[in-house]
Structures are given as C-alpha cells and as structure tokens.
Image 1: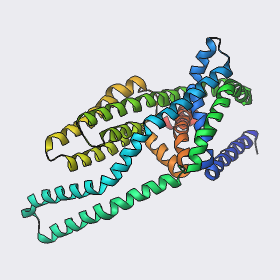
Image 2 (image 1 turned 30 degrees about the vertical axis):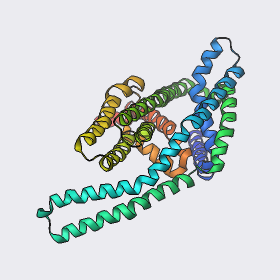
Image 3 (image 1 turned 180 degrees about the vertical axis):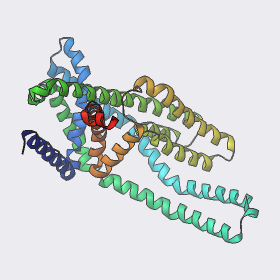
Image 4 (image 1 turned 90 degrees about the vertical axis):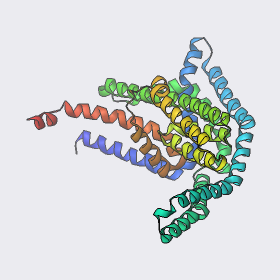
Length: 355
C-alpha cells in the first residue's frame, strides 16, 4: 500500500472514531461543545482586549464572567415571564384548539351544500380526532424527545457550571491551541490547508455571529409587533419565532402557524388575523432582503437547504450536541467540497470529459 493510501486510511479511522465518540457521549459532550462555541465567538473580542495591553487570562476571566452574568440575568429576568406564559399557554391550548375546531366547522357549514352528509361526517370526525388526539400526542412526544435528548436536570446543571470553566480555559489558551494544531499540519501542504481553514473560519464567523444578531432582531420585531396587536402570548410567540430563525424559514413558519392559530381563536374578525399574518410576512421580507444580507452576507456559500439538512441530521444523530456541531460541519464540508470541485475541474480527468 502506498504512503498516500496509508494516510487516507488513518484519516478515515480518525473520522469514524470521532463519529463513534459523538454517538456514545453526545449528551455528556454538550456542555464542552457549548464552551468551545462560546470561546470561538468571544475570541476576536479577547484579541482586541489583548491589543489594549490587558493580560489574556484577565480578559478571558472577564468575558467568561460576563457570559455567566448575562445567562443568570436572563434566567432571573426573562425566564420567569417565559415560564409563566408557557404554562398558561399549555393550559389554554385545549380551549384554543376547541375554538379553532368550532370556527372551522362553521366555515364547513357555509360550504355544506357542496358536500354530502357522508363527507361532512368524515371531515368532522377527522377534525375532532386531530384536535383531541393527534395534536396532543404530537406535543407530548415533542416535549418527551426534548427532555430525553439532553435537557435533563443533570445536563442543565453541567451546562451552567462546566461550560464556563471550559470557555475560560479555551479562551485563555486559544492561540496556543491553534499554534499546536498548526504544527501538526504537513509542511508540504501548509499554505493550502491554512487557506482552507481561513475560508472555513470566514464562513463560520459570518454565519454564526451574524445569525445571532438576526435572531435577536427578529425576536424583538415579532415580539413587539404581536404584543402591540394585543395577541395573547404575543411576546413568547414572537421571541421563540426569532430565536428559531437560525433554521431558514422554519422559525417563521412555526411562529406563523402558532400565531395565526391563536389569532383565529382569540379574534372574531378577519382584520386582526390578516394584520398578524402581515407582521410575519413583513419580518420574513425584512430578514431576507435587508437584515440577513447586511449582517450575515450573501456570499458565505451555505445554502438554506444545506443548513436545514445539517441541523436536522445533527439533531437526529447526536441530539443537542449534533445541533451545535451541525453548522461548523456544514461550513467545513462546504468549503472542502468547493475546493475539491475546483481541483477536479483543474485535473486531467475533467479535461478528458471535455474532449
């Protein structure tokens, strides 16, 4: 076997070992991966603090303390409101569904002359079964999967206590770690690999750091707009819609369905319902045409379909740890894939096809 063949097998074995490790220890690794993600996000700010002659360990401790205080402040200030609204929403959900059912049946009665009695009976049974059974079962399975997928009490505690420790040490030693990793790169391919890592860092930074700003702005926009319209639970619906908007179109779609459902149950007129719908469409229009192009950029090379697939695949295979690793993996595969295609087009194999 040639040397290149042996190297290929080494990389394949290393990749399989990493996938197996994630498969076995996915939930345990979550606070560590979260600490790595925070260290990556705050490293540019720490570099600026170093330029101001602030020792790196002091800057790392300050940023870690700031992150911890921000999280606990959010828990103390926002979480009680969210907790109350979520519980109240769960209590009112059956009445919302019953109200929607009654209005849908009224709408069906309007078109009753166009249906037979058998059709009407079938529609009513299907709608009643959907409202009373399928939806509740789906919601129950959703919360069960979330709980079983990593948000158990032990993981929450480890997230609050282990993640800051991991974040501090990685921030403090970030440059040293990169220097060690750089020393492992084969000297022959050093410029190419460095360039590829630079591309990956550009794509990842542009998407993640920009998308965080996009989610916050959308959450404020939706929450404020729905609350001004007087929609019940408008704040929580809008905030969650914004926070889930890192999944392209999915966040807006979920918020739209829930918001319109609550609006139909709450309001008796079409006017407020249409305004609620316009708020969601306006948010999607602003996000697609102004906010995302400005904050994220349109040349990062991560297609929305590829992002959705990566998040769903990562979450399905490795739980919340997979969701955190999905975007970095998508960025790496995207950059390496484009590089491979360029190399292929520059090769004789591609040239022979043209002949």
